[in-house]
Length: 342
Image (cartoon, rainbow, N blue to C red; front, side):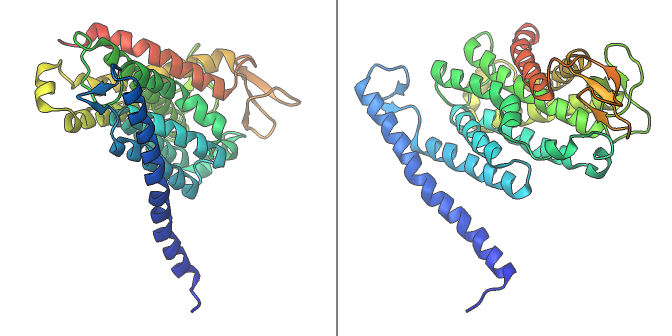
């Protein structure tokens, strides 16, 4: 019997999850067996509790299957290319394994930033030369946006173990520092994406350069607007709220009662989004070239007929994103430690 195109698509949409699950289950069990073997060879390991390996087979399964579905969704929506999807799957694996709260930050960033990138896309094509390139992220962009969070998640696994824990700098400093660092890295990227993608196409007035407050064309590196600053704060708050909700529903209530208040997580995410966006804008205004070509498009390279606006040709957009996430992830835990109520 011949199937129509729509029927074939529906059949594939059913088969793909089944095949992914069939692949993920043996892989996750393999990881779990390795975990059990390690615990038997090192019975005094700090990663073993009550005679059982700390990482359960269900955690391994989630760490395999969730990133695969996320990568498949990104490929289907054309927000990532194949290289970006493969690297994103690895990052999702590490973050899921460390804590579902860390995974929640990644998912919130990925979904909301993808929506922001596609918002009023027809107007962005008229502003910046490289919009089409940036609309589908490759492995370099994924690395520069999620690399710092993944590195901190690996340190979390090596130093803390795995699992969801409340933020409490007084009783659990290392967990709190690393977790707020991961939140800061993802909030920085989300806040900056919201500011650049939404601020570029909302409002009628031109933005101003963060270093001089001079009015510059939309799409200029280092240009900010009051609306963009506001949405960068909101982008970070979304991640902080996501982290807060996951902690409330995954941590034992008795543990939460004895820990420090958790509501500041929301505001920590907002500060991370705002701080990261401002850092990105400052680096973009000083160390990233911006010019206008003869067609009125903002370009990042000097050339014939290009009028210089700001910055020097030292860093590109990927480097600026990476440096901003590093700065925010290292700064936010220190600020949180100072202001967090006990």
